[in-house]
Image (tube, rainbow, N blue to C red; front, side, top):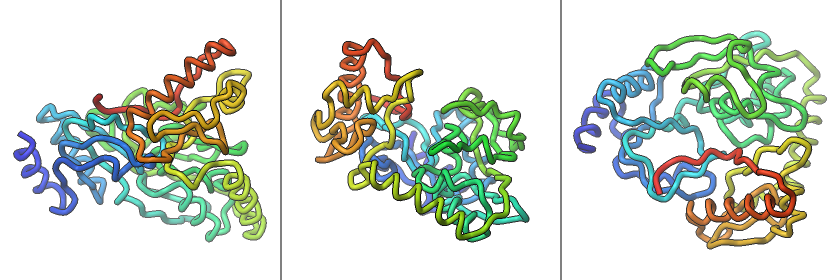
Length: 302
């Protein structure tokens, strides 16, 4: 069956952009995860649409990934088709607008805005995800978030149609959006920015980069901030005050540098990550009565 799907997809995408039994650990920041039955790397919106519609027509499960920065894929991998959008990474400038494809990283997009002397994306200069992932989560940092600067987005609907939504239609909230609720696939984002002095933009980005590098454990693979901020608390502080920094299960460890991160220090598996996440949640609940909800997305089979 998988071979039949593989051969059908070769007619839609370039040969080297369709892979069978591909380890998904190659596509996640944690360097963990099982295999994809079929993995595709589209290079155009039409390839995305045609692959998606092929899956719909043949009732094949399809999972869409960006660069895997805020993601844990279970060790059993993912059945059906996995579509990874990292080949779609063009960014352009039109007046005060930056238009970025969903596979472009939000960091590179913020640097492109700097080159064009446009302000508004400085907060994103250290967020490791793609543009698509940033919209999906309404990513934010240091007082800014995507909803502050997004003008509109081109999406593929769950019915397989291309459609443009204005930002106000997308219900962008703290770590949630209409994208996640209705399974809208981000293809392109248009950001409305403001002309500014390039030295001032760069100074702000340098400051935020320093803050990030000094506080976050960037020397190890990780999925970024694991937990959402609970109302009235900070997840990292609760974990730290529970004495969990340095706690390790298998190769996964609660970072000694920032307790809100779980890092891969020694060949961790996704199972190591998930067991450590559960341990952290139970310990914080027992100590403080606070339920920690994961910000990281967890998908795939056991």
